[in-house]
Length: 139
Image 1 (tube, helix red, strand yellow):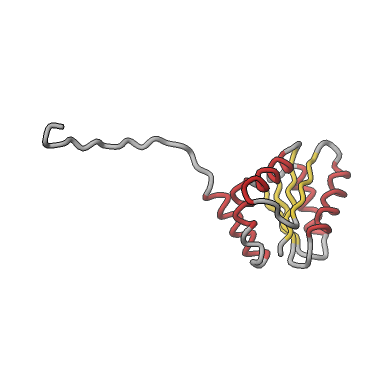
Image 2 (cartoon, rainbow, N blue to C red; image 1 turned 180 degrees about the horizontal axis):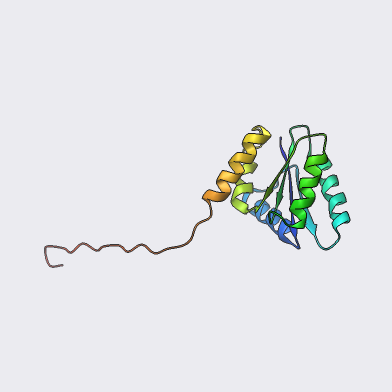
């Protein structure tokens, strides 16, 4: 099963994990790693989280912002690591939630599906006008 590490600024990662738990119940192999202000501490904590959730099928690190410190730290770890780690920036609840039920896929397929689901679930609310049909019997 693919391991999941969620990281980001402040309480973003813990909030995402709390939401996932509320919606889908407890799930194994998920760790939240919040970034406060220490780059080196974050790197150490992400490395530990990856080791904790990795059972051999790979790990995906979801970060709040592509190009932000948590994303960059995960990217560095992924490029230096001996085992398979993928990194996705711009994480949202739908992409991770749908992924919870597809963790037996290959890491590449899992990553692609997560990106697809994340994009598909970004929507704006809009009112659609409904045409009322007039009754011909005067009622």
